[in-house]
Structure formats: C-alpha cells, structure tokens
Amino acid sequence: MNVKDRIRSKLPEWRERTARLVHDHGSFKVADVTVEQIFGGIRGVPIQVSDISYVDPMEGIRFRGYSIPEVLKLLPRPETGQYPLVGGLYYLLMTGEVPTQEEAEDIEVEWKVRSNLPDHVFQVLKAMPRYTHPMTLFSQAILALQTESIFARRYYYGIHNKADYWEAFLQDSLNLTAKLPVLAANIYNLKYRDGIYVNPEPNRDWASNFAHMIGKEEPDYADLCRLFFVLHSDHEGANVSAHASHLVGSALADVYLSCSAGMNGLAGPLHGLANQECLRWLLKIREHFGRVPRRDELQVYLESALGKNEIIPGYGHAVLRVTDPRFTAQAEFAQRFMPEDEIFRLAMLVFDILPSLLIQQGKVKNPYPNVDAINGTLQYHYGVKEFDFYTVLFGLSRILGLTTHITWSRILGKPIERPKSLTTKILEEMIDRE
Ligand code: CMX
Image (tube, rainbow, N blue to C red; front, side, top):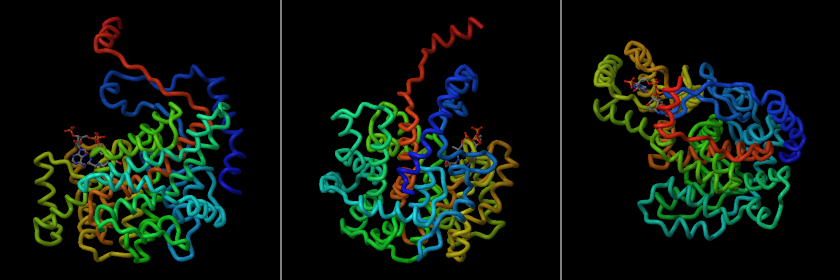
C-alpha cells in the first residue's frame, strides 16, 4: 500500500484516540512546573505528544516503538547494500509500520520523481559569499524552495477544511525530502569542490545518490550514509529543532517554512554543531601525543582534563542514562569496515577509560557517550573532512523526522501553540501568596 493510503487507513483510529483523551481526560494533570524548570530551559516538562519516536533514558531512541537494532534488522535493504533503504525508514516514521521491500522502494521511486531542484535555488546559493556557513546555505535553500509549497498554494486558493490539510503537507514533505540529497550535495560541491554539478543517478537509492554526488564512490560509504541518515532521523518531539519546526508549523506555516526554522535551531552549537567539536577534540589528542596514546597515557590526560573541569565533548546527555545506541551502531559499523582507523581506535580507547573517571568525578548524570562521540570519526575516515558540513548531514536526516511530525500534527488537527510567559514580579507575587 502506498504511504498516503496507509496513513489514510490509520487516520480515524488516531484521531479518535486523541479526541477521546481530550474529551474524557481533559483535566487530568500530567505534571507540575517548578520555578527551577521555568528558568532551566523547561527541562523535563512534558509539552508535546508525538508518536513518531521516543527517547527512553535507559534504552535510547525507539522509532515508532522499534529500537535501533530492530530498525536496522527489520527495514528492507537495497540489493547492493548492507544497511537499510532510507525510504523504508520514512515509510516506518510516516505510517508506524515496517514496510515491505516494495513499499520501501516505492518511497525511493517517489523521491526520484520529485528530486528536481528549481533553478532559482541554485541562484540563491551562488549569490551568497563563499565563506557562508553550509547550514546557513541549507536553511536558505529550503526557504527558497517554499515557492513550491502545495499547501501554501492550496490554502491561498481556498482549501479550508482542516481535515484535508494533511494531504498537502504529505505532498510537500515528500517533495522536500526528495530534494534534500541534491540540495546538500550541491552545497558541499559549491563550498568544497569548485561548484561542480553532479547529476543524481536513476539506479541509486536516496542515500547512495548523496554519496555519489559528493564524489564518494566507495560502496562502504554509501552504507555509512544509509546508517547515518537512519540513525539521525528523529529524537522525539521536544528537542530544539523538532520543537522549533512544530511551533512554526502550528501557525499553519508550510513544511518548507517550518523545516527551515528547525534547521536554524540545529545550527546552534549546543544542538547540531556538537559533533564537529568531538572530532576536533580527538584530533587534538592525537596531535598532542603525535600518535594514538597508550592506555596509561590517555588515562593521565583525561584525569588532568577533568581535574581542570573541562567538558569532554561527546559524553553526557540531557535525557539518556546509558551509552547512546546510535553510538553503538556506528561503533559496530567502524569495527566491521575500518577497525584499524587511528581515530576510531582512539575514540574506543576514550570509551574504555572515560566513563569510570566521570563516575568517580561524581558530577555528570550520564557518564556514557552520546552519538556525537563517534559521528565525525566515521565521516573523517571516508574523506569528508570539512567539519562545517557535518551539521548539514545531520539536518538532511533530521528533516525526515521533522516532516513526519509536522504532517501528523495536521492529521491530528493540533492547534496553534501559545504557552504563557510571566514577568519576574508576577512570579515573585505568586510565591509570596503561597
Ligand atoms: N564532561 C565533563 N563534565 C560534564 C560533561 C562532560 N561531557 N557533561 C556534563 N558534565 C558536568 C556538567 O558541566 C555539570 O557540572 P556542574 O554541576 O559543575 O555545572 C554536571 O556534569 C551535571 O551535568 P548534567 O546534568 O549531567 O548534564 P546536562 O543535562 O546539564 O547537559 C550535555 C547535557 C549533553 C549538554 C552535557 O553532558 C555536555 O555538555 N556534554 C558534552 C557536549 C556534548 O556531547 N553534546 C552533545 C549532546 C548530544 C545531544 O544532545 O544529542
């Protein structure tokens, strides 16, 4: 069944469940909010219900209820690769069901048909100064594509039945995600390969076409792209990029406007930029020793860094309390395809030593690695050495999740978001009255 029909078949059940919750349990109290939480980034306050993915502190991300190892095992693969077709992952996110081979390939075909980029997008990219950050270009290009929004056009000409909005959002989502590999590869080529243009090839899947267009032809790198794009596609609905795009979308802004907003959040150093910091840190250690250090040498180095209260990039997490399964999946990939790589060996040596030192230090809530502790290591091995570009890779994948959240928000008729802000005086008076 194609993705649209599958969603249509599921829609009545989900609408009814949501309506029943609001109707029968509308006054049920989910949480209290403390002053500390208000001043602390709304940390841990449930503000969103989304069934696309969920981060369990002790288990990590589950996509539509499936853990990372399950997703990697169950999703269909291309004939030529050992990791899943990203089209299959998109089908799973959108419908909640593991696709058949045919259903996964159908999405890949939909993407090929819709992958053409209008000329004005190239013009926008070329008009920017050479030193523009690739994430700025990525967000701008998505915004430039807004001219193509089917929802914006239909709304202007008068679809006003809310129950039908989702179909235009799904079309926009398929169109935008179809264009992402061409878009990202063009930004890479513009920045780092003298602006050459490489056509996508009709016989390649979404991920391997990206690898091909940036000039990385090793079959293992195409598999790394498949793995990376699956792993980074979503991390539940309340992180900065997901929430930013949801918020913008709640004003009925279309998929392009919403995803561009999400990418602007992802471009922040506390969110998507962290992965380049981790690789930089590992390279600094290798440079310091002139080679991969011995275990005892690294132990002393790390103890000294922690003694100076340095933050070790790639370790800790706001929600997770175990090793990030996305770290584990990429470590397994590296063990299989590049076990002798020096930076990978160094990353694994850090993994061997650091958690117990962080536990001894007693400050950090999660002493284990997050996905960023290894992301850059693998890209670097395959020659993608332009650190600035790593967040675009992340964004290319994350838009799969963002567009799914946005489409399902329209399916469920979620209203415009409007929380409340207080003044300091009002807050003080509320406390005094207690
Ligand atoms: N190295 C050393 N100390 C660390 C640390 C690390 N990697 N992570 C946290 N700590 C320290 C904090 O600085 C804090 O110290 P103080 O009490 O002196 O201020 C203490 O441990 C408690 O912090 P926490 O509650 O465990 O961590 P937070 O939830 O506040 O922050 C995170 C989480 C990820 C921002 C933080 O662990 C960090 O900065 N890690 C390094 C950067 C990184 O890897 N970022 C990528 C995050 C990936 C993602 O979000 O997906």
